[in-house]
Length: 349
Image 1 (cartoon, rainbow, N blue to C red):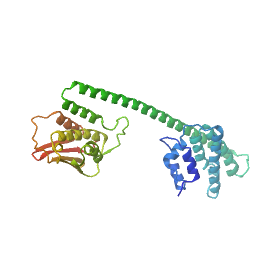
Image 2: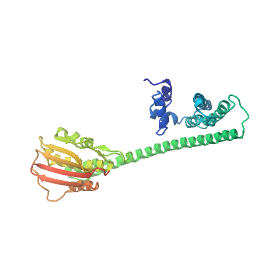
Image 3: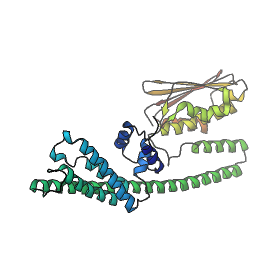
Image 4: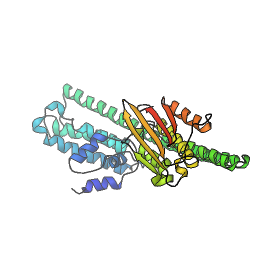
């Protein structure tokens, strides 16, 4: 079904916002307008203030629609429900058009309900005490609805402003952090005479910052393990890296720490292990057992390896990263190649 002219009109006037009315957008979708929820939210919470004429026109349109619905429902309603369909019209008018539209909707709804749906109908009769109470409660309730709608609009706009300010500050912090990293890398290159050591240290620094931006990352978001390995290891070494395992989502902390671990192991493999030989291969497989993620890194067709006499900085770094995730790391140094098993609780993020 193609989008109706109403949907096209709402889309044309849409502007960005992150909050809105999902039930209303669902109703519009069901009756055939096919307006995406995000576009509907943008239409409701737009910054540009409507002119008084447009605001009144919006109130008139909403009340007219509410009047039509109430008229069609007349055979199925009772006298006490004279204003039932006008409350949503008032709410929508105030949300979209602000104070002028909300007040206009209240006045028009009051007159329309009194004239058409209070006995005797189609005449402004002298109301009795019961009807006066009914009309008074309608005015009071409608005023509360408009006030709450206006407070909600203001809250939405304040959240927009706060988010904009936060993003501005995040961009500034990110810019300064990049400058700081550049300065540190320059100091490392100028201070350490051993070029290989300087290169290794620089790579570790880059790997530590080559993760999701903590200022932009939602802690509830996750990273696919395979994508992490492709980005960290396979993209550099290509077909020499073989990945095998099910889809696994990592928490933010798991992704950050394992990125450093994989970078360290791939660096060591390129210098001393299987990736230092043209025919060398690294098989990385993983599985889940009893809420634990088990990752096995095994090198093949490389030079013979032997256990180190003492742990170097890289080994300590990997152990520290895994321990921070409440996991454990088990390296083995068989002559056929270096292997390492990493186990972390899958629920720990």
